Image 1 (cartoon, rainbow, N blue to C red):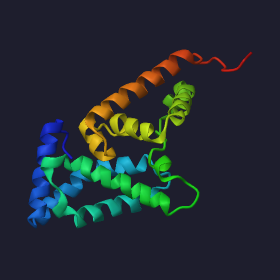
Image 2: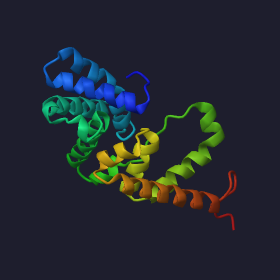
Image 3: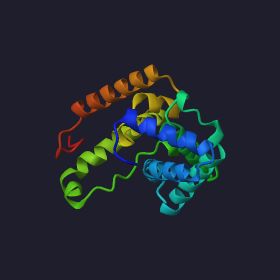
Image 4: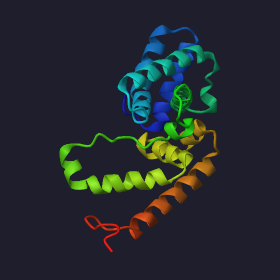
Amino acid sequence: MPRLPWPLRDAWLSRLAVRSQRGDREAFRDLYRALYDPVSRYVHRRVPSKADAEDIVGQVFFRLLESLERIDPRRGSVLSYTLFMARNALVDHVRGRAGQVPEEAAAAVPDSGVGPLERLMGQEDVERVRRELARLPAETRELLMLRFGDGLRFAEVAQVMGLSEASVRQRTSRAVRELRARWDAGPARGELANDG
């Protein structure tokens, strides 16, 4: 997908979706190419197995093709509609595996795949962030991942999660304040938490 500001990106994806609905195969190919990276990143951040992640991405695009006629760009962005489908595919995937709670897996804290220098310099901070995020409810983690990990706008997060935009803004603000307060109250880098 070309790097466009969100209003232009949404308009471009909407035009591709409408052309695809009219049977334009090239438009669907372009829509697939434009959506593949964001959908793939979304899924790969939440599924540890590369093979499973690729299967889920394939399912998302198959579902997108099946539901193409139901897409109405006036009701929300095509990207958030597709990520909503990806979220549902993740939940379905986890339901097929015993022993995990679907919402928990959909909101799992991803492995960031940091480089060696980052790992050396900030491993304590990375682990601390993961611990703090893990303490949050699954829905709040998912909201933060969509907003900051996947770079979605508040309206898109709201559409993916089935919430109002005001609720997403409020929950995001509250979660960030809570995380900041915990961070400020916690041990500084290099200090041991319970060194008594």
